Image (cartoon, rainbow, N blue to C red; front, top):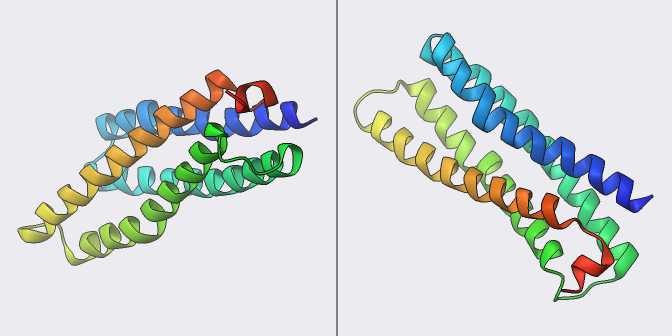
Length: 146
């Protein structure tokens, strides 16, 4: 049962990250006015953040329950790291970016928004690649012990 649930959660979470981050968002910015595209993309990223938080917590709990806590489980620590990154993006950087947007993106606000966007984009890329590594390796016991 764990393997099926793992595959479903990883597919929804990591597949959603890749689809929204690297397919949907670029299309939105090609087809829509920049502020509208940004608002829609922001909503989609927020939804995926909550999907990621739920998935990470569920997968971490399942691994610990099924296999126990082992510091050598690189997949466990990858999930923990991904969860931390999502929480930082969603609850630290995203509110800062929303505040800058509400104040108007000109001058220093625009520059600061660009820096924050660059940081969050880099963190998102790291999470995307970490998620891909989890999908490729799986979370099975054999993989966890390597």
